[in-house]
Image (cartoon, rainbow, N blue to C red; front, side, top):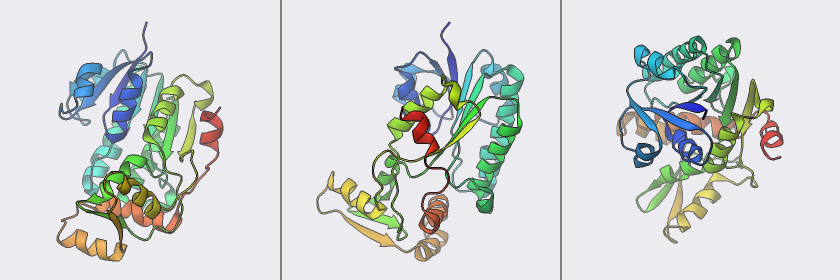
Length: 270
C-alpha cells in the first residue's frame, strides 16, 4: 500500500508537494483556493479552512503522515487563531485518528525569549503541544530561505529591510523540501528538532540580493531601508502589510543565526 501524506498547504508546501511527486507518497492537500496547477495534477485537493473541524476529521482518516506549514499573515489575532489554536486542534485530531508522524515547520526564532512576537509565540506553543503529545514528530526551524529574496525586489530597485550585518547560510528551499520528505522514513529524525541553515558559505543579505538582482537586471541596486523608518511607513502608508516581515528582519538584524546549527547537517548531509 502506498503511504499517504496530508499536507496543509503554504508557501514552503509548494516545494514539498513537488518533491513528493518523485517519491513513494501520495498527496492530499488542504487549500483555501485552487490556484496551483501543479497541485491540480498531482494531489487530491481538499478545499476548506484549517478551522473546519469536521472537514479535518473526515480527511485525516486513513493517512499516515501529516505535514504542516502555515502562515496566517500579519494580523496578531489571525496568527493566534490559525497558526496556534487551529494547528493545535489539528494535532489533537491527528492523535485521535492515529497519524504515524507529524512534520511541522516552525522557525529559527521560535524561542521563549521571543514570545512577545506573535508569529514566534504561535510556533512556540505549537512546538510545546507537539512535544507533550503522544505523536511522533520532526520539527524544522528554517532560517533565511532563498525564495524570500524575490520579495525584496520592488520594480527597478531592491529594498533590504535593515542593515542586516550578520552573514547568513541561505537555505535552498528545494534542498530543504527533499530533506523534509526524507525525514518521513528516517528513524533517527523521530522526535527531533532541527534548525535549518543552508549548505553553502554564509553571505551578507545585501550581497546575496545584489547577486540575485543581477540575474534579472545588471543595473538593479540594493537600497538599505532602516527598520525604524520601515516601521513608520508600515503603520501609515502600508497599513501593516510588512508587519511580519519587519518583525522577522528585526530579530535577524539583532541576532543573526541562532540555535544548534550542526544537528541538521549531521543528519541530512550523510
